[in-house]
Length: 605
Image (cartoon, rainbow, N blue to C red; front, side):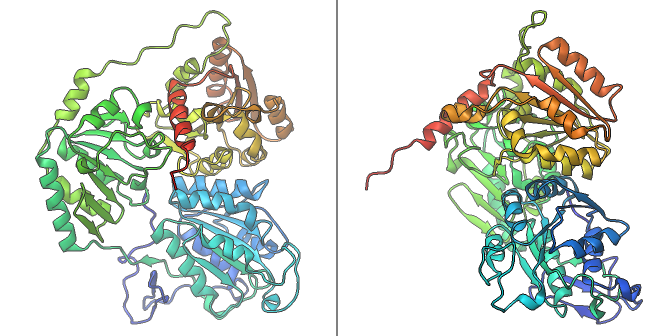
């Protein structure tokens, strides 16, 4: 989704008073009408940061308090349009900011120095890999301690305070260490604007003694950002479109495949326009599910090599030309490097680059500009879709369960399909939920998120918290394995505090099933918990919560009826007991191929 951060129209200059940060990331343009003066007691660094977050669309900040960030948290709480969501640990706060950014376009979290920063680091790395703008704010040491030989707590016992900063350098696109007020305004604004422009996380460290001190640079309401728009090279765009159109127009049965970078390129609409104009069969990579409407008349499913949805791989891999928009080809998305694709048949469109077959390549071209221009040059060709329609056979239904028969996973998801609507969203945890949820057919408006590139187990608990907080009008359905749930369960507590009505389906199969299918061993078996009892203990009579444990289809039907009926305003936790070997056929195939890729012997020296 596009994040709105003001515009050139709303910030049209009438004077020459312009502030331009050195990296040219943003221009804050001031009009002849002076911005609103701020009460001197509120003209502080902390209040400025809070106002900036609200301005870019962040109304919830996920935090864990620590002595270095407490004063900053006071300033954030004082902002009337900002809600501070206290999390149980920093990892989940980061995951929540990730989930929030997937819906709102940007998210934010606040932690304390080093012990908090290094705890949240894993979540920020995940956001970086998934191209999500997350503002990670850390309460840092007192400004007087920088450059001294003092040793502080929350450090590794050295007077060098840069360890945390160095760790964040590889997983953020900008790092601002604010330890004086003179350049604080510029550093904060540059960091936030860079996150929005690059669609990556940024790191802002604020010395604990600075956030509440008034300073003249914060004496007026911040002027809305006016981000310098990225532009395509016109000659390069024309050349790329001409080459791509010639390539595709001579093909007999071309197809389109959407990838995950459609999100960061803000090119989803342009991709659909291209599909409308061309008539090509339209597929998505697994990590792009939810970014392309599945109700499109030429949609043929998810392309994931050997584990694609029915008849999709046959159409894609037999095509004589395919355009991939924003793909990421890694060992997981390529099913252990086993995709039957040929480079000479492919056009690869990245957010700012186009490569046609084995060449030529064109740089400085925005994906959405290229897709829209190409749509005007392509001849309509429905051959691939016609072939799909010709060979398609609807999937059969799972075998009917006998009375009180132990519940099977395929029966579970048959019922889940019926729950989906434009008012729901699906969060799929790393594991077999990837494969089962990918087979769900998303109705118009239904959200869908999972973390395929980074694949950190436990991500979904925090991400569900953040996503549900960002779109309270949708009811989130989260599918989490028991192993993943044990990593991050604590913030079910925060969901209750926030009054969320998510339905969590806990798939209890006794272990790390996805890893069993890659390489089995005793380490993949986990201690079984009384999960409903645990959630009841977290509930502790505060907030609205309902739990159920289901063993058979009859139990499941009753639980779903209750969760969507009398308990529709409650957080609902449904523990689903299934056999440890009850997995999707796709996981069995995918696991064997990834295992083969992992176990390749060293190349001869």
